[in-house]
Length: 342
Image (cartoon, rainbow, N blue to C red; front, side):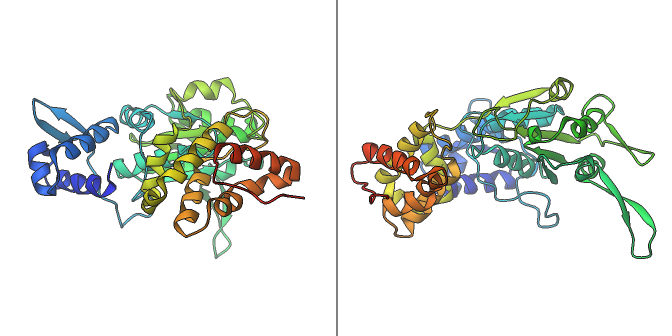
């Protein structure tokens, strides 16, 4: 799907929220079949819906980026290859807090940013880790210039008060004793107590978080407490797309990679199989796929692109591990030949 055509069609909907395929084809000077394909994708993303026999209507009230608030994401590239975005949209519309479960680098954060962009609301993020404490998302006492104390609100309370989106990134890397502070914000009480005051969430406040799998590829992850899991009413699994869909995603980020489609598809097929390997200490993510595409477009050879973006990371586990990966890639890609490592 052409991102240019997609943007043209969205622009027409911002001018008039009710459209037909024939009107869109005429206004965008595009074949009706191509317009129909874009509309089908936008329908999956819950951006438009079909009405009657030939009508289409805009479902999202604000698709244009806001230049007034930097907390509202804009120009987010996300292809809803497995329905994650449409599920998140439904959860947001219903005011149900959501939890995304999946490995690193599959687009969990991008999907949430896209929801915030489509809704036209600010999004605040807390990046969790083993060192995260409650003041990182609740807030803490601070000192003004004149020496007086005041409570500096954290991103969770700010999002609650403004009716925005609060995103807890990788919350299952934090200790459970600080996560318990989320309980009252995410259940029927919808409030947080801090320094003797209660902060009540606005009606449109929505919390969404992501967690990584409990495996050796995501060190530091822990089981979420049961009472917190239950407060995220919606749980959505996110996985890597098939190579052909991943190629479509990459083209949105690096359009000129189409000139290297055969090589890129070989890379993606190889990455897809490497992700299934239980022996390797690290798996390539979509980020590596995008990097390979950028390097190919920049004129690097496949060997150079793969080495710089992916293969050399294995040298931290020893040259033999890196060589194992090289041999696997060479078995999948006949035109790729790595130099011998000592």
